Length: 369
Image (cartoon, rainbow, N blue to C red; front, side, top):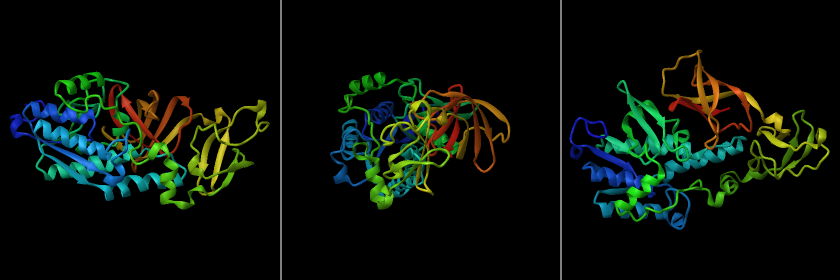
């Protein structure tokens, strides 16, 4: 077996590498080429190239396409740019805007992995005759008893398992994550050794299609009615103030409510505890009203057998930056599940992902409803 798990020489193994233009995917491609694999680099153009050329701090921008091409040219393997603007707009941007209009808080990076990158791009890799597709994600693929499993990356600060919970077993069988067992420091060291121009390139931070973090402007372009004013109400339905459009409010938010004192007992601060899109209402309450112990999720993806009805001890992450919390998972029919937390958690919002683990293994998850 070669290092990618195929019973043939590396030179006879074609690997399509998803190249974002960042250091992680560049090192992945360069290392595999160095090891003798038949490497083909692919970079996606996800939005207008001219408009994107100056974008910094985001993935898949114009400068990133250029960086990926330079790496491929310098190392010596073919590189292609695929125009996925229409796919990305329909599957990711419009879905993002629609979710906000429904009062949810979406995670477009998961949707992008779930649709454009690990569906459309993976199909293209197969059309190119690839044996597998490799990425620079910090997540581990471990084969146990002949079955590929998904495990956390070893660097907790860089682990990307939360964003990849929707990876199906079929996709996982085809995917490889060569640097998933590394930390970022080692990746940059390898980039310098390989002479890559982007060895010191900073990590992407922003949602790629949201300029300067202003997600409301993106939503308004698709839904001009997004800033329709409405009522801010308490949990009993009492009107406490006016909001400037539900897209400006997320669960757990405290600032910017514009509600004076004297509303609550002991003048406790108010937080957004929910959004009712049908009634165009923002619902507020005290901090304790944010606590939830029972969560329902839908559109689930499981990398274990669907043991419907059985309680499974898991740890669950409810945000990408939060620590995993102990819980009971009960898988239901129709891709639904119930999660019962050992200790109530705060600020849980519909539209976010709940990702479940047993130890370091990612067993799947779903979208909070």
